[in-house]
Length: 287
Picture 1: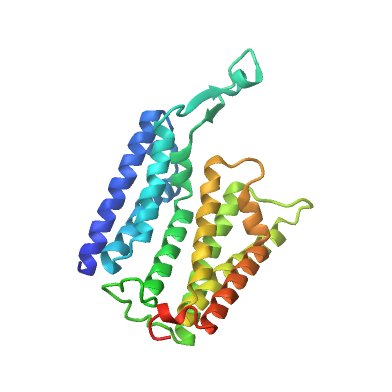
Picture 2: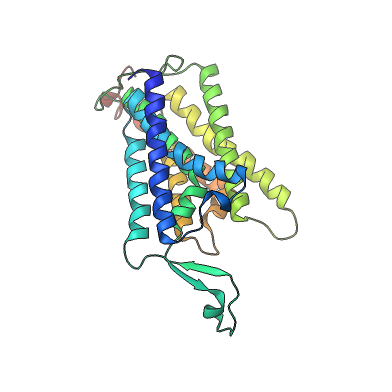
């Protein structure tokens, strides 16, 4: 499909995706109407629901990448299923939970908020879906057992040059860092002692490294497993927010990123070792 038509069709699917989820949310009693948010908040939430669907659809139309679309379908189906199947969301005043005589006007939602959290965290889901896309793209243009993509990225040959791989790593790392720092701030990740700025600086550097390193290994050395594992880390991290408790898993991902980076380096070493032992070459192209 031509590039312009692919973009327009993807955006139309994104608008439909957003409209369906918002209509379901309103029917369930959630306060998600335009009057509930500022202009920036409205664009972030509504726009997020559009983009989180448009990106996987565009990748499918432009490069025939199916993993982001599959992940989108499964995620949206999960969100709608949890909202529409029993027990469903229950709205209760805090007074009822605390045994107070007078209502407080503060409502607690039980067994719900899946659409609301999906909408607010759409940027994190988009990063996860995009990582799946680039992993599939490199894998399908590297592994003989997989069908190659019908379209290639003109400026991204496989393997990429050092400069090109560095550019991909820097940009991808910055995108991952920006979204994950925002995610941590939204969830209220903090540290005792009043040194939040140290935590966020440390976390921001780590979030950049956590994406930049595997992306460089992916496009420069065609090591697929680190970036694939990173995509799973991101998706499992944001998925846990649907039922997050006080011990939010993102605090571990954000504050102890070096543990995740160590895991990615270990799996990269294993994949590289298998390649050196000629256990991978038979399945790859031009390696």
